[in-house]
Length: 128
Image 1: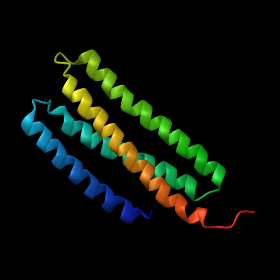
Image 2: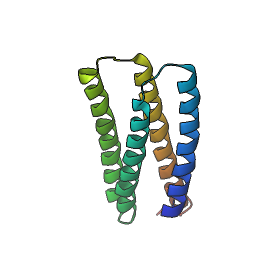
Image 3: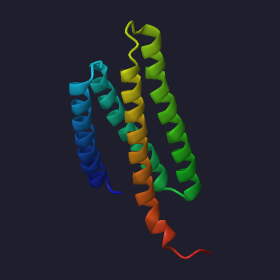
């Protein structure tokens, strides 16, 4: 997926997620930290995209290594803010944790979708 298409798809995806969050927030009492989490996942998705795209320009082994590394980085960098929330927050709302995991799941799915789109042209090449 080209950069411009990735960023436009990410913006559209984020708008849809933000609308869903607005609906959820209007019906339930959820911390305002969900908006910070949304921005955090946007930033994390862009960083992971840059890392995986740099591996795609090289050979397949580099791409696979960077992709696995990016998945690990995404997991760890998604886990740390949640741990910090549990340690330092006085409220500890379960609804915030559920929305946070919702964001993690959907942005990870978005990342996997972008990877599959990148790999689709390779599947049409004849095997050696």
